[in-house]
Picture 1 (spheres, rainbow, N blue to C red):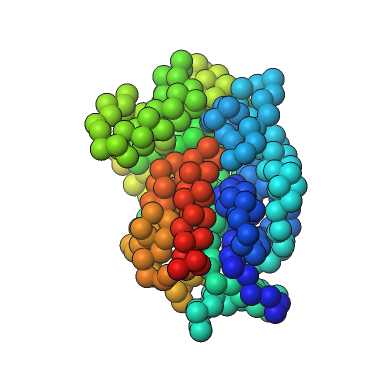
Picture 2 (cartoon, rainbow, N blue to C red; picture 1 turned 90 degrees about the vertical axis):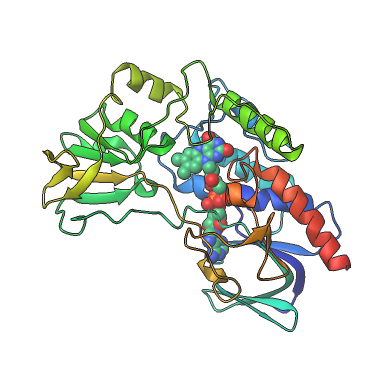
Length: 352
Ligand code: FAD
């Protein structure tokens, strides 16, 4: 690749697409690179019956409202279709199955090395690589000697293969709640958490959660106090399948893990339960390892930024990684704000 781009966006999931939307309004010469073979970002790899916890009206990228269908909460398929149509609607320049392994900075240019040996050059770069490629599983005593099956929620597809098995789901967020709702229909499930899980009241849905989060963000920006009903974005939203499971008392019992033996989970109260499968719904780390030659990550895996701009490397921005790169920026509705601000900063940077 001999071109030198003004901007290269690494990642063409929802965050990269939001950046692309604002870049196409400028005169900058830009390109998006993505490791996946298909459009849809991480959504393409989520489990079959994943439902958004944000209603369609609160899940739109800049410029085009997500079409509302019969059910208020879009399905995984509807989100993927929206994201794929979105990139075509705005004719975003995306090159796929390009996995950036490493980025160096020399002579005021970023050199991006792809796993197929190609080198891409740009004056500025945006990392929009999310978390999906970096599943997080906590270190727990005995995990290595446990003889049963273990998988992360990012590899979970559907419940049927676990029929008649004893399944342990670990985690206290939306993923764990939705997987428990499904697996509990086909077999016995056990639930392990670290902290007490927080459920949003059944009459409060993802919309309210996002409205709260937006109001809190606005108040914070104006330096005002905001006494939100302490809903945080990690609260479990009562999407239909979670609400149904809640009424079946699926979430009534939960416990904290002390460790594993070969075939059992050992609880903190000393009791143990025989387990065949562990599904780790324990979240993700940030996919930024390819930036290791440019910036260091702090102990919680984050990179020092001012807003979305990397402190340790001028010309590098990070979009869509959650609160540390912009309020609710890891959500469809929230990432637009960060993307708009980032592109403005890049224009100023290139003009200076
Ligand atoms: P991703 O979607 O992960 O996209 C990153 C892209 O970067 C991928 O396409 C990947 O191929 C590419 N990439 C990664 N590394 C490289 C590399 N080295 N080189 C090139 N390309 C690379 N958000 C909501 O708004 N509403 C919801 O209801 C909601 N529900 C969720 C439910 C679950 C179970 C999960 C896991 C997340 C949910 N989210 C929701 C959050 C949101 O879907 C994700 O955070 C979203 O995927 C983030 O988008 P992204 O573009 O930042 O990252």
